Structures are given as C-alpha cells and as structure tokens.
Image 1 (cartoon, helix red, strand yellow):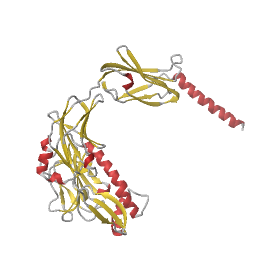
Image 2 (cartoon, one colour):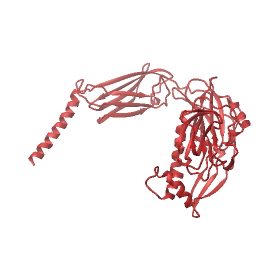
Image 3 (cartoon, helix red, strand yellow):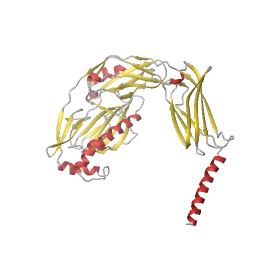
Image 4 (cartoon, one colour):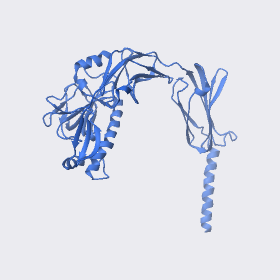
Length: 432
C-alpha cells in the first residue's frame, strides 16, 4: 500500500514537473495563420484564423482593424484552459469600414511565464484594401435554348479579375473557362428531374475581395418527357453478376442485398467520383468541334432519363434513373472515342463495370461503360475514332452493350444532342 501511495505521489510530481517545465522554458511564440491570403477584402468575406502553440498552450487572441483614426476590435478570445490549436472565424462587417486601405493586427499569447507572466506574444500586421463593389457581368451570347436533361452554353465578360466564374443552376455551380479573347465560356446542364419552372440559370462571379456579381440572360427551357421502364431481376442475374462486388461489399453474401447496395449506395458513390474527376478537365477545348461519334451499327436499348422500376419475384424492390444511352452492336464490338481528348480514367467503376472516361476540355467528358476489354491508359491522348476497348457485360449490364454517357462538370446529360452537328453549331459553337 505504501509503495502504491509513493508511486502515485511520484507520478503527480513528475506530471507537475513536466507542466512546470513547459511553462518555464517555453519561449516559442504562437503560430498565426490567416486565410484567405489576399490583399483585398469585402465586408462579408469570411476570414479563418488558425492559432497553434505546441508548448504551454494558447491563452488569448485578438484581431483589431484600423482605418485612419478608426479602430475596431473584431475578435477578442480568451482560452480558459490550455489549447494547442484554435480556429476562429470573423468578417469585416462589424467594423463599418469604407472602401480603401486598412490595417489588420492579429495578436496571440500563450500560457508561458515568459515576459514576466505575460507569456509569449505573436503579432501579425496585414495590409488590406476594402472593396465593396461587385464585379459586373456582361453576357455576350444569344439564344440560349436548353432541353430538359440537355446542355446549354453561355459566354460572358467580367469587369475585373475574378476568383471564380460560372453558371448556377439550382444548387449546382458549373465553372466557366477563360478564353483567349478574355471572355468566359461555360457549359451547364438542365437537370432531367428539375421542373422547367424552376430552371433559372444565372451567371455568378466572385472577385478577389469576395464580392459576388450575378448576371441574368435570356433562355428558353424546353420540357421533355422521359420513358418509364420495368426491369425484372432474376436469381440467375444475381448469381452471375453479384460476385464481382463481393470485395466491395464484404459484409454479406446475400446477392439481393448486395444488388440493392450497389444500385443505391455504390451508384451514389460513383456520382460523387464523377464530380471529383471533372476537376481534372482541361481549360481548353480538346475536341474537333464536329459531331461526336456513335457506336457504329448499334441499336438503342435504353435512353437517357428512363425511369426504371425494378422487380424481384414480382415485388418492387427499387427505382432509379438511367443516366446515359445503351447501344448494342455485335458482341465484343470495338468502341471508338466519340471525339478527341485525354483519357482521365480507366478501370472498374461500380455500377458501370469496366469503364473509360475521356476529357474533352472545359468540363466536357464522355463515359464508356460495361466494357470487357480496355485498350487505353490514363493520360493517353486519343483522337476521334481511336479504339478504346470492346463492349461487354461488366457492372450491372444485362447483355453485351455499351453504356455511353456525356458529362458536364461531372453531371450526366443527354448524349443524343452531341451526335447532331446542327445542334452543336447552334448551341455550343455559336456561344464561343
């Protein structure tokens, strides 16, 4: 018992010694990081202040702005207990500054007994210019006619350098790409499941200060009806197709449950992946401005936007939407690149099976799915008509065919338009 008490006392003494040591020898100042790292700012631009102190821990932080004879405190934080890292957020709105230069001073102290108990103090001074004027948008393209499920294009100019530019449709933002003439060009999608009354595309730009400019443009939303389809899922289908997903969904061998997870959870994961892949799109146009190729001598088996209801043993088990066009030719038919571009993905992709994705630049990509064989590699430049692989039955395919998709910033759209040179001339090239 005496040994136990002695041990506890020693541990406490050591702990206190370590803490005391930190307070005594800690001579390192706190680290201060402020973002965004810009020289201009708008009143509503949110700043993120990150403070770190690996020694005795943070004690306080303060942010003060000064403009001529005006001084305003935007942040005054005190930390009751030692913390190694703190993140604070603030805006300039409470300061009521006018447009022009101002100074921001950030101070942070730790809990060291250095400086006669005041602790180590770090100070950062930053010079900014307050800018409250939003950028102006000048839409230069005309006749924006967009079919439901299809793609639109717009070009516009901006009155000043901007941090981001693009088109907003609902909750989606489609980034624009700057052209050699200084204008911006943007492709966007009229979602297949959006009520035409709610389709209100707008140009949105944000300058370096954080001011937002919005530009409206004339457009016509063309409604479209999509087909309904019923698909029966058989035990034979499940037994032949689900084993390819055993390594992805290892927690069950119930083929029906695996199918439902693939058709729902994996499908959603695939959609997220496609949006991430869109970030690799080249800033310039890689395709030849001519109509995209269709799989030769192929019959359509399913269309874009088909609403599918799935049945198993006569019972409804799921509903999904088909986001591409299914084309069937000869078994193992050679699949040509629809247009020129760069291969950005090859491999197994969830519901799509073995897949190739080509980037055509400026957010436009094409997807080739259910392949049995892939003959290209990521990073490879391809020309229109180059063979990418052969059709197959991988993924959730029923029968040998090609699932062909057209993506804009990772959102799938109707491929049919891109096979029509007249549509391309009127709706894409005329906007450049």
